[in-house]
Image (tube, rainbow, N blue to C red; front, side, top):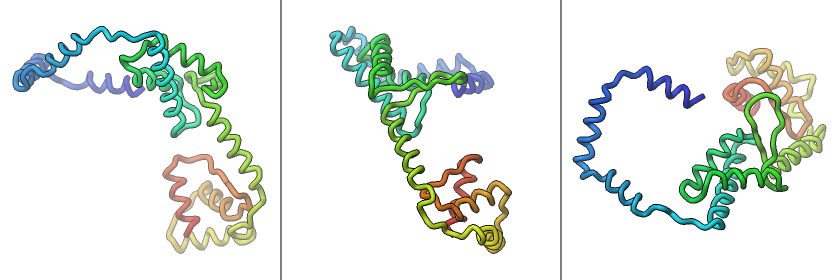
Length: 210
């Protein structure tokens, strides 16, 4: 989607191709045709000869890099992103078919990728380590149910939220008020919020702290 938006944005711009070409040639002259020299030097070093073993090793390193990067910030990631990261990582050091073979091998091997089954959206994957982490999070939530004293007794929470909002001159909609009351009166070790985008949630937590 980002690429499509970029193409549309470029189409809307008015520019003179001849002028741009002339400016590029003038820049080349000023820098002594440095870009052309570098390209020529790179071509002289070709072809890069790699053994099948080296190709397989680089492909494996690239897929492992892409797998680790995929779950840095997300539990589930688009498979296309994983492939793109792997190919960029090993550019010039292996082949496309070697990367795809390694990716398929890791999907079939325990400890590698796990396919996410979904009827909608592009193919997605996660990892065994991420799945184990999510299971641990769920178990922590289960173990923490009704295990802590509430910050505010259930009978007082509505009154407290109302008076605090008035004192801080804050306007709370029904969903925000309900979320704050649930947090303050909950006896669970962990409580989750689902709904509005991140900035709205971030505004609630300072309110609860104060």
